[in-house]
Structure formats: structure tokens, C-alpha cells
Length: 479
Ligand code: FCB
Image (cartoon, rainbow, N blue to C red):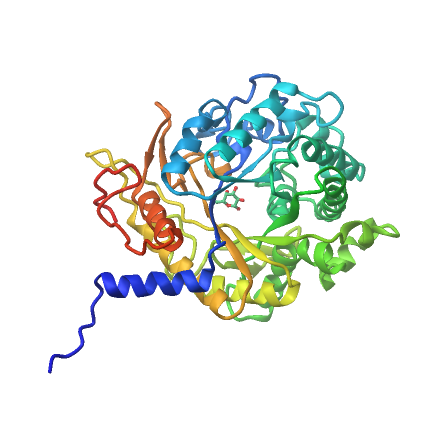
């Protein structure tokens, strides 16, 4: 009698794909994410006003190699090519952000029709290609004119944001089924007001606490505006959630990690979804809270957007503005080329905990790996490390869903290599390589791999994964 083989051939592959289909369900959304300042370029084209990032990048020593988003991926002019690439890669959904200063150059008042038309063309192009647009109102590029009036520390900004949300809802709400208010509010507030790593470049605890509260008020006012002006859209917000760990098991580092956890993971979803601040922040933010604010902030949303990359570490730092300091992950843990810890159990557990705590459908709207990718002599980018990262994180996603978490979509950060904030263009996250001098787009091995994952899991009746061809029929050695 012959022993049954431990085959990894077509039958076991078919069984695996069938199992994944079963776990994920037929409507699972496979997507990619980007943001306006990181890809659009065209910073001074067609009436776009300056943003805080345009200003911040001009400061010496702030961005690696003195880079900025002035040109970036020139997506403003090349969006049609980028949509065609997504279509070739089987991408089902595309998350992008609107640049507030492109549509309202001074942040409020006069509307820039040319800016709105760009997003009309983008959205219509996506729909024509069968790709679902997901629109985020705010991915960190505040109009500089509003910064000059105090930015997030001016309470009036909630009303300015609501007016902007109403404009976007009226114009695009008929065609965009999912709209988010904010992307990662904890990052731009903490980095901008607590650590001076992002605009406006402050280390001022009081300003940080004001900004947190005003962003929350703006979220609530934005949700109301979208409900009124985009009644068909499904509305949510996007939060980055990552375990905050003490660098060492000492009381000081434990307390530091507890504080970081509140700023990073709780300052926004808790008040927005549950109607209260976490305990330490509640005391610090209290001076800025007025009667009725929690009702203004805690508006019903339809889903929870989650971004996740790796765990974080904190250590005690007496005398630091916030009482704690950031720490690098310990040496003995696995990391991506850019030094972010790889810990898939953390991802699985975050999804399970968020599902139980907030009881909202979850969409993972960012996950991915940064690297200093290079073109090889044959003109390919063989980013096997990224393929490995995405494969193990997707396995953790399946595990979370199998454990009962209601996760309905997964978006890779990012479609294209792009302007990675303080690290400029050296840290590449794209499925598609961008050769910046020529703006040529070259799908990496990870793009072909992702296209195959989507095709295998989605295509009805076709369970064969075709390892031999990439999305455009080219030989695909990498997968
Ligand atoms: C997230 C941001 C995104 C990108 C990735 C790598 O924090 O939302 O813009 O920078 O990290």
C-alpha cells in the first residue's frame, strides 16, 4: 500500500484556496491604499493651495535627503495609468485621500473647481475599471492657511472640517460608497504636537491635548455633514492600532507603555465609538472639553478602519514633554528591512480585541512592509521579503476571522512607492516600483503575488493559481 503523499501540488492548493474562500466569504474586499500628499505631486498646479507638509518639508534637516511631495509619483497627471495597473492586478478597491488644499486652497471659502474635477476624473476612472473607490477626507495635509489660524488647536476647525466634508459629500457621495473622516489621527497629533516629527513641529503637551480633542470634534461634525450630504455613503474612520510594549519589564517602562497605548490606540476610537476618553488622557484633556462635546464626538459610524504594521515600544523618560520616550524594538525580534518588528500574532490579536470591543465591521486599510527595493539587472524588483510579510500577515488575518472577528476587507499599503513622510523616498512600500527620474511604474514580485491571491480566492469556479504568469501575461519568475 502506498503512503498518502504530503502533496503540495494542485489538489492541496485547491483545498487551501477553498478553505480561504470559505473563511473570507465571497464579498471580501481586496484593495490597496494611498494618500494625496504621498503620490499626487502637482503641488502648485491648477490652483492647489499650500499644505502644512509643503511648508514643513522646506525646513532644513526635517526630511531625509531634503525631499518633499512636490512631484512624488505625479499621480495627478498619471492617474489613468495607475488605474489601468490596478485593473491588471485584479485590485477590487482603491483607497485614496482628497487633498483639502486642492479643493479649498485656503481651507475654507472659495472652492477650486479644477481640484474637484481631478477627483471626478479619478473616481469615474475607477468605477469604469470596476474598482470601488474608498475616499478618506484627511490624510494629514492640512491647508497651510488654516494652520496660520491655529490649525488643530483652534476649536473652530471642527466647523471648517465639517464644511469641507459637506463639499466632498455633495460632490462625490453619489459615486463613492465608503468615506472615512480621518486617517490615523493619533499619528499626526502625536508626531506633530508631541514629538516634532511632523508639522507643525511642536513638543507641547497642552497643544497636543487640545489638538486631540479638536480632531475628535471635527470627526463628529464631519460624520454629521456626510450623513446630511452623502446619505448613500457608508461612513467610518481609520485608526492605527498596534500593541504598545514596555522596552523592559520595569515599572517605569510599563507606565510609559500604558501612556503610549492611550495616545496611540485609544485617544480617538474610544471617544468616537464609546463616548469617553481613556483614564489618563481624560484628566489631561478635561480642561479643553465643553458641555455636550462627547455627544458631538460620538456619532454612529458604519465601520472601523484599522491600519497595522508592527508592535511599538516605549520607555520611561523623566522630564520628556509627555513623560515617556519612543524605543526601538529589541534586537532579538524579527524585523523588516526598515526595522519594524514582524509579529503576526499581534495583528491577529488586535483584530479580535477590536471586534469584541467596538462591535463594528472591520476593514484593514493598511498593512505592508517598507524596504530599500532596487531594480535588478533584468529590470525586475524581486521583493520576496515583502511577499513573505504579506503572506504571514494574511494568514493572521484568516486566523482572526476564523476566531470570529468580523473583518470584511484587506488593503495593502501601498499601491506605489511614494513619499514616506520624514524618510522621504528611500523607504519604499509599493507593490509597484516607481522609478522617480522617469516616473516609470514596474510591478514588483509582490504585485504579481497579490494579483494571484486575489484571482485565486475570488474567481468563481477557477481554483487554479497560475504561478506561471503575471497579470499582464509576462513570465513571472518571482512567484
Ligand atoms: C501609516 C500612514 C501611511 C504610511 C504608512 C507606512 O502610518 O498612514 O501614510 O506612511 O504608515
